[in-house]
Image (cartoon, rainbow, N blue to C red; front, side, top):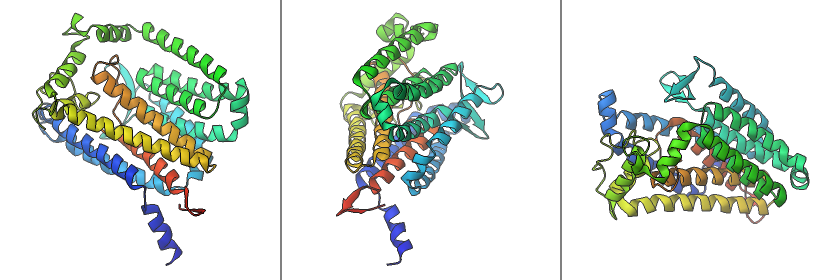
Length: 382
């Protein structure tokens, strides 16, 4: 068989379990968004399928981005991690420039690109994972051995967090900081260094919460949403009603009542609530199971890569697992009243082009790492 044909087939032979789990979550997202956005799209755009059509375009763009990412060797990402970090930082600065950044409900998080918008914070998460993975490989002894090796990447994380808080985007800040801390911990940083920085980080988060009145209001609404049922607690109450109406088997796809302008913009951060209302406890557990299986498989790939000395690939997988698990936990926790209200997308499921594209790129990176594993008697596969 010609070498070029063999290489082409190798690139197409992705891990079936990872691929199917990612595809299943994307399909769940398409179904959930289609149902949750019908009335909203009809009222605001005169087209009940407005968001469904746009999301299909996002899926196509995410698929193309994922394929391109998968076809690029892992070594390229390791060598260019610093460049992607600079691009992400530049975009985080650019989004704050008046006239360039788009402000929605007091937050300036988006850059308008024609009919679509770019959310730099989503790119920053991916760039941070790639950069930290490369740094931890290059400076492994320094990271594990002294404060300087630990503080250098934390300074980078601090710069990213500062730019995110200026927008402000508290949710993305928590995910970026948590992912970085998790990667460094898994990379072998000293426990004392880690615990001290964790304490500083927690104190910083508490200070940030109480520094803004709207965050305090969200915390108050979380502890007792019925104290202000038509104000700060309205969104959480409507979400809890959606969960309650779903019971075991749900009210049926398309039959949600809460999406009829009770739950504001239900196709975005609270799409899981509508899914739970329409498919019930069984449907909600299905999505949780898909995320658990996906994250478990990614961690398995990380473990295999680490055992074969592919540390950069392992750290990328760890970072990806931390982002997916962190965002899924926060999004589902907020929807079910477990956590205070926070604007974070559910990976692969929530409406949003940048989030979906970056999620597919991260999954493609993991798939590429998996293809490079030595599983055929000492021969590397991809």
